[in-house]
Length: 266
Length: 309
Image (cartoon, each protein chain N blue to C red):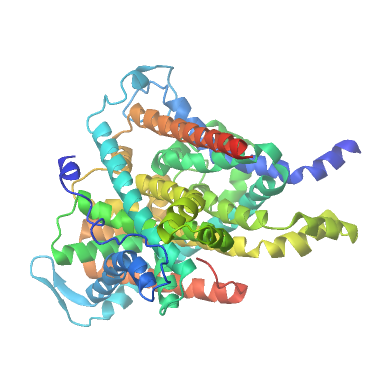
């Protein structure tokens, strides 16, 4: 029975592709419904094709403002978390020091904590300090929870680095600074880039911690949350679709550049 | 906008230059650690202490709160909200198992069978992150809509009769039932299962599979005796990365569920942001934290993987 044999051999492929379909189905729906012209305030039922939302993505008040707030916070949070996280990762991999276990747990715990717990406790701190909730409190929170993920990503890369390369650089009379900039940093760069991308995605998409600590500032996820109660404009789907497409193109482009560079070296 | 251009972010001034190990100075690691660890101590550890203290305070919003070591708050919170706690663990546990069952084949496919499609599939797993998860969760409202094609098909196939009998759905609805919430949780945390699984599968030496085949192991035996045990680190960190955030989640229960599917996250959120009963909210989130740390520690001990970070 050739078909049964084929099925047996490719069962895992079929199961995997079904999971992939499950993962992508909502994105298909989001994209299709960005061309919808809903009757009421909610965009949950298909009515008819329309390009209205795509022609006027900022047509809903406050939507693009919230998007801009989210992008700014994600940018600064990525910068901060990547800087602090890379330093910690280098210290963890390259040096022996006391309190290593404590540092490791302090980095692991934020990843092992439900967001709502961190959100509530951080709000308690801000309320006790009398801090003005808004842009800065969101940024502080985002750097805090992105930090551990950057450390993990950079650490993995630095750990797999061959220390002989740096020794070779020193043997060739490169100073410590030159060794770091010309050898260490370029090799660690993919790890740092991966950490930064992760931080950006986590920060841009964060809702729970932001919702607790935002005060009256509205980020894009908070706008979506609010509209889920009041009425979902089609423009939300337009922005969701556009972000998806931009992300895919960005990754494809950076991969193409990486491939070209590798080929040049080879 | 203006605050951004005027002032630099507060993290820049304290950050020391990433000095190369000149003579492997004794203090260098501490300087490297200082800014980041300080950040975590002030904005992660300190809040936990504040919260612990809030949970044993009494008072009111108007008169202010005082620490009175009022531990009864914990008892009251537990006796009032234990169903939500049980529900959280139940939903998150089910979602985690589903994630493992669904995610493993895909991680395996990417690691061993995808060939030149590997990168593309990887991108497709990660890219949905960039469409806000709230928008994607709202899309499930459309997919699971009453009388929609999916629900209609499930109804015709009498699947809904079975799930209704189990108490997962109610009548001919899927939305606003436990099934919808678990489905949303599974969907939302699936990538957090797939990525660690893939990382540990990808590390497995392909020659081990060949060796197993040479020793007359059938494919299933090879998987059971070689592949799966070697992927255990991925299974452990994947289940943790799925279970922990799923337990505290309140977005899926709110958007896809009903008042009968409220999880502990919903209670904390309401107590904190709407009822403004801070001691109860703090006690609840402290119990949640303790429960999760306990479960995680036991789980890690059992599975024998210590190196998670």
